[in-house]
Image: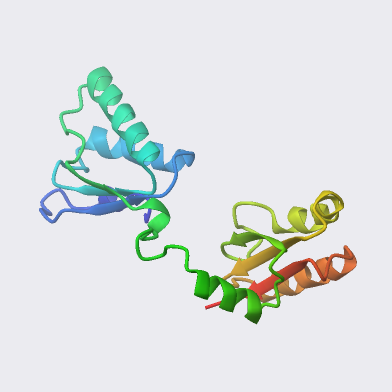
Length: 183
């Protein structure tokens, strides 16, 4: 339901719906959009928030193709915006004082090259934390000052414990950090 909130809207409900489109590779989003357009559930007064300009262009293009091919009357909503990864890049610019403070707090040397994976620490998260840990020894052969930081909200405490155990077992404990809920 969260990927297509307009699908369950009663026909007489006039309130606009704002839908967030985070990615373009989820089959369900395309199916929901097709059903919403074909059934008239999505309206020109609805809005979309896209994660990237590329996603908005792709959705606009497919929308137009479907309009032409199937005769859908609803135009692409004028109310659409792009919020890159949901992060305000003007507010979150690089800060040298914050960088120094963070490196000091985490005991990261100035010549360390840090690779950050910031997402949910969960087995269901896109990407593979475990594969990163297993292969990090290979990275260190070429880049001995590389540091992998896996950070984010913990969804599964057992998974977090497994990650930390895996880091020790892989022998990369001094070059991999697992940070639970860093904020």
